[in-house]
Image (tube, rainbow, N blue to C red; front, side, top):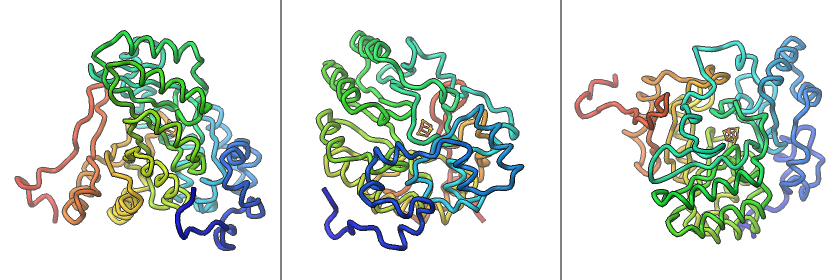
Length: 362
Ligand code: SF4
């Protein structure tokens, strides 16, 4: 399946951005299995690719011991590797500040553990629950609010079975959010069977799937995967584009495949210092999402999670930015700016009351 008029062969310019992978055969590059096999996962390779000063490399090694890393060649190729402030690099390369910069972050700021009737299943609101079907990801996003689980790996089959039994025995649950980690790291057959078992429960009306794969490994959204997912509709797909630089032609194709299959696609960005915390960048991201049929749904304030404090943006700064954007941008492009209130108290909208307080902006 291809997009009409889309180039099948990468141009020299596109290939030259691929750094050490520029001679890789195009068919391999577009093959998600090749991408997974060739993820950057060793300190040695990372040092070779980044060519940072030895002191930076040494500090990075200490971070990796606590918070591992993995980056697909595709996502790596979007980066300007020598620029420490590059928004792609910030999201995927271990940073010494993960250990040294802390404003009091905690491992589980949303206290998800408090609402787990069984391992991996969060049941906080009566009508829905969230199933963490794996702790594996294609890429480990440095701002992740579940980085405490990164070393835990995949949920075993018995655990998935227990989740299904719990949902079946709880008639109030009408929606199940399938999350992780990234559920699209599961073997297709396992995910198919899990979604099918949930779909067979009469009171489960809607499934929601959260995955960053369209952003970090868009070639994984294959026609075969989409055929499997569409069997389980109504299925809502939430992803997380944070930078306009992530809106590549590969990502656009992945999103189009999902949308064409009748799977609505929404975006839940995180407001991240140095990545998307200016009006210009945020507007570019929102316009770009709309162009590829992805609805900007939420913009989350970065949670006070240990190891990600350096990404946090002042709440007022975020409110002012989103106020400016909402005054000059089509409503379809404007996500709800919210914070997850620490302690599991739910989402709180962050907005200025512009009618009452029109003098808020200069
Ligand atoms: S894909 Fe999601 S769960 Fe995985 S590291 Fe990124 S934000 Fe965290």
